[in-house]
Length: 410
Image (tube, rainbow, N blue to C red; front, side, top):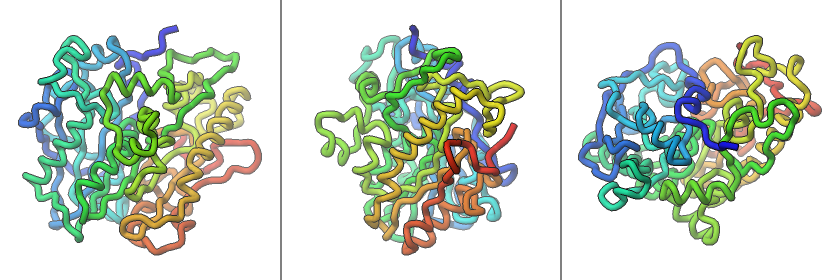
């Protein structure tokens, strides 16, 4: 069996980010061409888009773009010729359409007037690679480079030098990302936290809480549904080596014999020093097919299983229930952690019982009558609140899934 998806199929699987329908700020392109180690897969410069605050705010929302990953030479070579592997086709401006970067106070009450940055993803390595083209010219072959972490470090340096991103007690840096960007957010969060010792650095990863999945789908209906990318700890060893991935320093100390476990939230979370507000669905329409081989029977009309249990095959529901229980189990250290972090913040959670990946918007899903950006804003604004006020999760009755009535529908 071939385990690796080509880049174009991977990109097609990933849904478009949920949009705040209006008030999407326009970001200007900044190419990191002066940073020779901050390159895309094809060697072109890494990049970000910036929309500066019109109110003079010293606060920042910095979001990392998603787009899957490549984990072998063939798929990475394919990817290098796309927007997920090269900056050569990037436009000079881009609308920043995630709700958490909306400039509408009604849609994004906590952050609408902050400085907004969107870090483009062109390295294929979940924003984790540290290859130096000057030293690793033939590491991968064909002139490809995994330099995602280098791009993040260069972005921070560029913002500091050119846009007044400062280490001030009056500044908050919200470090975010969706999907692959959510995984990159977890991986680099303490790096940013340690870089800015005075500012309040917090993480809001969306669709990035991954666990080592030893429970690949084994039903009778198309097993596996597609060629899937294995995602157990043993597989991460190969990805760590291929990408020369950054390993957060605290996690490296905590797991000296298993640094590859630090690539995902299950292995990394306990060592995080920075406060984090996790945004994660209880079942994931992209991760379950992409990494576990579950048939994506909800992908085409009439969309069976898409946030509906009545039309979903039982063995698909059975697997979803298992996956949901595993997700809940691996999130439990976050839920039970009562140790205040910087700014007296306890970690928070927004965890709806929906079948989505990163489709979190200002209208759906809702928990406790709030969308995810509202919940994250209240988390930051009220750090002294009891922890349960910042834990928003659905509890479905009985053996069922997708019980939130505000889930996105098709």
